[in-house]
Length: 319
Ligand SMILES: [Zn+2]
Image (cartoon, rainbow, N blue to C red):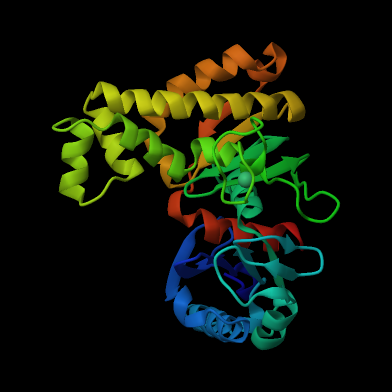
């Protein structure tokens, strides 16, 4: 394999920084995982990531400068064109950091960066469940709800790089409080906090949710998912409610963008069998029929490699 065949993808998360060596067909050959807490500051991050990339390149016998490039997905608003991280949602100390330039200088190879949800969509489109789509929307379900919009196979970034914040699409005036300070955002209805709120309301002493939560030591979306799959009616109702809100949000997205594919990933998507039917019913009932029938709505396929692969795909797409 020629040296240029290798790309490094970086998944910059609130807890861990995952650095992966990616082959030309999207295979992850090796990874390094570092604690975000130890590399919080931009200069420490650049040193740590450049070091990991060099070590990964060395493991296949090439110098870092012979890589196709390094891509980074960052958890916050990014000016991808200029390579600047505007700020990070859960990591303090990052204000308008020219990350692409700093990392390129330190590593000796080309560096590109984008918001992690945009890269989720890009990765699933090129290598995962969205392959072959022309217009695709990617959603990640977790504590936050991330979104990426691809139109004609390109990330749609908007006027200031701030497009695709699907989690903060307003579903109602008023409504539950969102992490962004507003009320009634999509995320406030389908994010982890909303699932836990509904789960606590559905919990009965001696019921399946209460028993599984006690065994786990706390209530989590996973516990409510397990209770639902075991047939517990209260848990199934929780996921039905989440599925309905997901369908409501998706119906608006389908009406506005008329995508041919929507890919849904993130940890909460592991409960697909529990929320999927209600979500599809709500989409059929609420979206305009042409928009509803032309979109396939599918679960993501890249799993926990999605961050690394999306970042590598950005390197390929910007060559
Ligand atoms: Zn919000």
